[in-house]
Length: 419
Image (cartoon, rainbow, N blue to C red; front, side):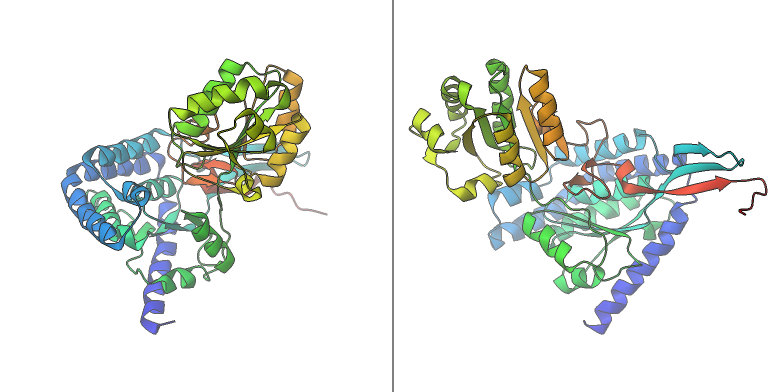
């Protein structure tokens, strides 16, 4: 690695560590005041942020970015206002730092408190979405963590303008080193940062599956991962089919390009003949392409025959795989074989079937009679989220403030010694 690059990164990480120590001294009121000032800064500098974003959009168009990527990159006055509101909402959330998870009173008089504390220094690697700069900075800051932000080169001007606007209203005593944006677009910088075990405490990649897998494979730092969202809705034989139709259409069509959208519909054989034509008609309005198993294609002749790879596909588009299954066990087995442990739902009036599904499906979020589209920090009452984890350690599902903390044991004694 270039010696100059190594020195730059060393300086950034050293400063972030020092900033994380200073954050420990801030009270909840001080953090909340700072967050509201950051929101004010975004509003005051909205025009400057839009100007920077126009340069990124022009470069993105010239580079041939997809329409979906350009939409994620775009910042308007309304979108900047939404980011400012999100910061104010984070300020309104309870501060997890210092809260006591559990108190253990021992017979010898020791009082043991399991207490939430910040993780330390976090590395955030993300693509396209410049709003992540603000969301990640605010969430990490509220949870007492220093954060090193490394956005994609396609949003480099937008990210810089956002962070500058957030930091501008803050006083000289604010620990600015606790929120830093990597100014280097060279990919070698990411590789070097991922080797800094012991100096950076956790990495959170946010973007496509390729980015996340690349980070996980290179990193010597613990990584909070979300590979993809292959989400399912299973319509049981005892489902209210009107309810099932509304849920399935919402899960597929309300916003197909997000990770909590349904990618595969599973339908019990006893209701497939009635339900599938209704589903095809309802999704036809949205021009959804259906890719079905052999039994599905017999019921829906216009459906395309599904390939084996379709069951594992995260389309993020108006495409839906459809499979007719023999019952609860077959639905659970399919999800176990092809799901991504993100979000899966059953629609049923049978409480026993619902409980079997809840116990049998090993996903971060499992639903009964509700759309998978609710897997989201705001929808869960957590406010903005840092991402949705499909890991099992240390957090699963929508990750908000609590998931950006760890804990330590605080033990209070009166002279006890162990014999």
